[in-house]
Length: 113
Image (cartoon, rainbow, N blue to C red; front, top):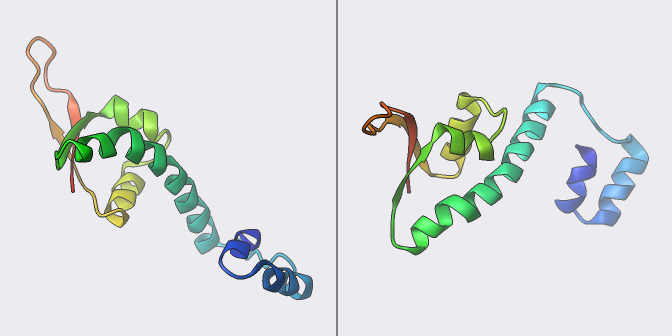
């Protein structure tokens, strides 16, 4: 985590701090949350570019995506973390069902911005 701080402060300052205090890794819950949130941020970019942005460019402000589609972009991300990520990104997300003839009601995610 300390190594990531080099992008927040000038590299020569970060190196001087590291020289005096070491890597400054706390090995605690907040550090783990920060790492997990960073991983979620990396997953967000392709999802935004490939799924949400094309809708918005066509003037659409709402999209419905299947559970499988969401799982492909956000593998192993819990529903709680997914909701938190979308909240931080100011995209409203809600689980719903959509009735498809002969297939029954699949679970869908309704997204709006």
